[in-house]
Image (cartoon, rainbow, N blue to C red):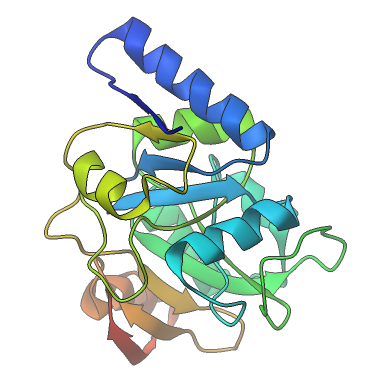
Length: 224
């Protein structure tokens, strides 16, 4: 049975964060607000939980979920060979709606799907998400919606689509602006590539990079 938690008082907020933390530790799925859209989350290091996340959304292993972290310093625990231009973007836009696709640490014991040796990492700019992440460690998180449907921007929408699949829903009120997801940038090469257009524009990203003599190419699809 899904438990839904309000966050309108300090006591309710603590209960919500604790319930989500315990559920993740048990290998269950949770829904939580982020700065862009609501997300469905699982322990990134629990392969069975990640499989359940993909199944709940109706996705296969060919669409591995990003990993959310509570601190920019965690990037180096998950990724290797992070180029300077990527670090400049992270410094400017984390926490925030920027996901970077990096070469993953080969020693990591996890299975996010068919990642081809990469990991997509983001630090969200939402206090509830960060509180949960600080207690759980990195979470595999995808937008809280069934594949092909718009991402949930409030707890009601998330519950309608995924309520039967998750143990805990944290209701943090409406989030995001128009349901735009994060912008995804592939930083595995000498030049970065926008893979998905989202809340951050190409112009905003390149404004940071141009003083470094770098720019991104835009190969992105619109965020969904």
